[in-house]
Amino acid sequence: MNKEFIKRIISSIFLIPISLFFIIKGSYMFNIFLLICFLISAFEWHTMSKRNLHNIFGLFFLSFSFFTIFKLRNDFSADYTYVLFVLLICVSTDIGGYIFGRTLKGPKLTQISPKKTYAGVVGGYLLPMITVNFLLDNPFFYEDIELTFMTFIFVFGISTISQLGDITISYFKRLSNVKDTGKIIPGHGGLLDRIDGMIFAFPFSYIIFSDNFLDIF
Image 1 (spheres, helix red, strand yellow):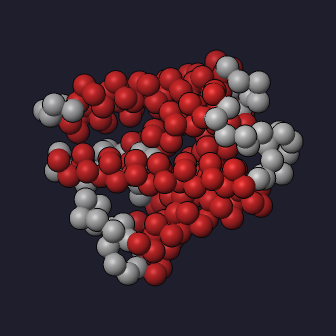
Image 2 (cartoon, one colour):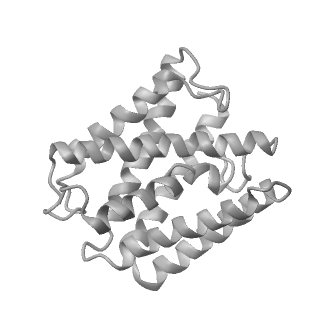
């Protein structure tokens, strides 16, 4: 077990409970937490891409993404359920991809992100499916979120967008010739490195939940 992996584990032990606390607590505490995360992410993006034409577009997209997280947490009757549900899928996707990719290795997925493998993609789909199957009836979630076929379609879609978001940010990092978006999180790099898939998954989720496009409730 290398030092970088140990750093990732230690960082996650601290980050996950802190994030869950603010998501579940809600109110102004969550809003302040969300604002701080946005400002850090925006700063990392601007620092990384300020000399490129996509800087303004990226800042606009980040603003929209964090706005959808704000709306999901504050404007829906299910309180923290939707945010926690999407967060669970994204984190499981990331962990599954990391474990499968490092363990099984195999062919590379794309030159944009050299560490991504086909095995990692499979793990990125498999772990969130398993996680949702076991945890969906947890007291943290409302009883009206049912485990249906459409639920798994939704999980598959969010996992796909999360993985594509990861690759997209990797592409812009290569354009800017940087390895990480920052150094704030040991073992992970910047905050934007940690939430790269989420910032794409939440806008999609907001559209689905607000329009009741999928009958998963």
